[in-house]
Length: 136
Image (tube, rainbow, N blue to C red; front, top):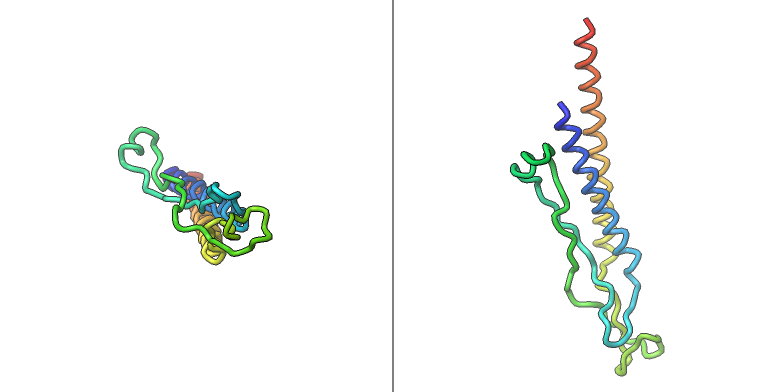
C-alpha cells in the first residue's frame, strides 16, 4: 500500500531536482567568462529507474536522478569589443543555455511534479477508503 507513496515521493524529488537545475540554467543564461576561462555550461538531469537491487536494499521503487551532467556543447560567442570580458578579437563567451529549451524543461518539471502530486492524493484517498472498509 505504501509503495505508491514511495514511488510518487521519489518522482516528486526527481521533479524538484529537475526544476532546480533548469532554474539554475536560466539564472546563468546571460553569464559571460573572462578570456581564457570557460563560461557557465548548461546542466542537464538524467533520470533512471530505481533498480530491483536498490529496491531490495531500500524498499523504495520509482525514479531517481542518476546524474547531473554539464552540456559540453559550444558556447555562445558574441562580438562586443566594449565588454569587459571580451578577448583580443573582441568576442565574449557566454553560457550555452538556450532559454526556450530551459523554459520548456521547467514546464516539464512542473508537469511531472503536478502529476505525481495528483497520484499521491489518489493514493491517499484509496488508503482512506481502505480504512472505511475496515470500520464495519
